Length: 129
Image (tube, rainbow, N blue to C red; front, top):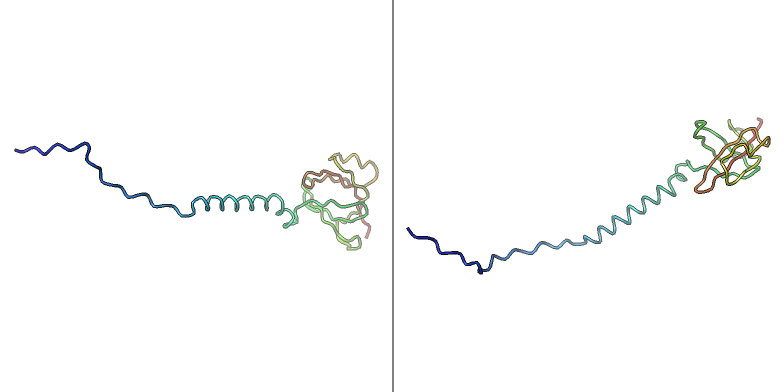
């Protein structure tokens, strides 16, 4: 019986093929981040305005309609002669507060709102039809 020749520990191992290069790998990561950033900004800044969910910061003398739940009212600007139900005229705007008591006796209804970092209270009177 013959024994196999001892293997040469210094013999060169078969060469491995280099891993295929990923084309645009870094570019894809940067592009993905930019897309994610744009979508995030659109949702944070623009989506409430597009869907009409953004609070209205009306001025005294303007008219608004109030709809929705009591704990989540929706306020929309309207012409004062529109005759819509739940139409109110803004009598006073109190900035930098959520304290509806700041209206005092000025308005029948007080509505606290927030628009971005601005907080304010709308003092409202119902528009008679």
